[in-house]
Image (cartoon, each protein chain N blue to C red):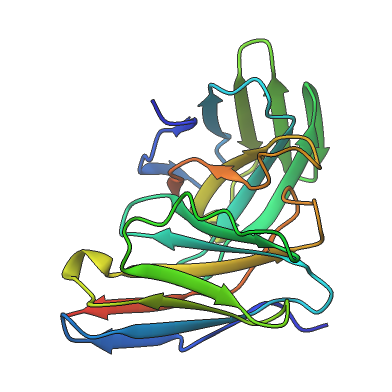
Length: 114
Length: 114
């Protein structure tokens, strides 16, 4: 079946612009996670959605970052007023409810802020 | 102190060598332990999954967990050039706990040369 998909695969933007990154989770997966991976770094947790519960936003690095999940499926990560330090690969993963130990990752969106 | 510590390497070995990758952690609530493999410009994929202390073997790969020492390992026997990738350890609390996400190490970059 279809895996996690993300779009765009690459995004180049100018400093100060807003960007939106999209994630389509595996059908039936109610848990969705966003991570950031900077060059040479591990996965930095950003935000976690589980069903209709309030999302865990504890990893968002600043108020320029926000995410929403519409209809319990597709999620959009928005970065406002992008900075050069936002350049990274943004990865999305999904899992069945309560099964954070079995996450499936998308291919990521490579964001470059000039 | 980060929740999960992993030496980023890089690690370079000849084909056929035995590779040992390790992580330590600080949170005794972690019960599930995973190893992800990430090829260049791809999302991470689940390689090994273990629960509780002990060993788990899958082909050339062996995952080892020592909860008393808060230490996990991944061994790769008869390493192949196709094993060249970044290996990330990850762990999570029991399903249904409030720690509803994975905690990742930084990843170890492995190169196996012919």
